[in-house]
Length: 267
Image 1 (cartoon, rainbow, N blue to C red):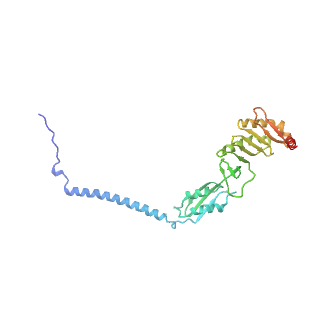
Image 2 (image 1 turned 120 degrees about the horizontal axis):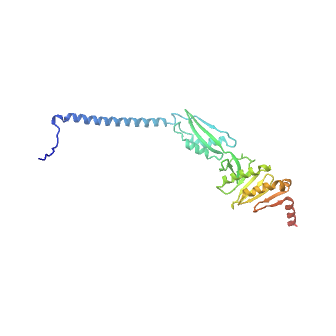
Image 3 (image 1 turned 180 degrees about the vertical axis):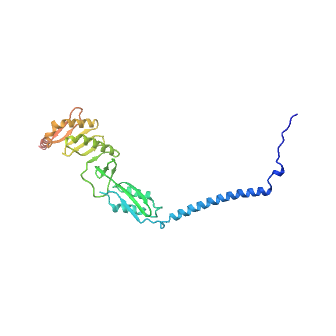
């Protein structure tokens, strides 16, 4: 005979009373309200604390330190540039704005701004280190980055480099290679230009011009170095121009030849 399972019921005596259910509901709501109250208190504390700390009169900045080795940078100009941003309190001053303002000065390569408790703002400045003139008015730093200073106090005893925009680092690196190649001859490069056709032009400290052209510039320069002791060393005062844009040789322009040609043209 098949038995049908019936629904089990809890005896009435074991069911919670109405009072017990009410107490359970009240306890649950009480825990929830307590949690919400704690969250509200915490949020209020954070908000009020932030408001208290953000008061510029609470922790005012009274000292601005500027550190760094300056040769060209005008310290007064730097202070004037950052002054509009060095306002507020210790916790509210905009250090990013101060760093940006400092790095906009041409002679500032990098700026680091830190807070020093309780009232000091410190600026650590790395000045640009010019290694070459670039174009007519600019300079290159040691990383090949161009910058144009507004100061009249500029270094003079630097090589002059020139080239298309965006190729500053390439020109600087090639200048270093060429200088190393020519060092055994006792001559230095005073001017180097990469023209728009990507051809290289050099001027040495003895006023000699070297034309290297576009292709195989390094090999052509080595050809000049090899020929220097036998062909040029004893006649440096007469040497004017060496055109190395040939596959197996070069053409030489001497001072006397130039004078003779000039005289011939004038006559």
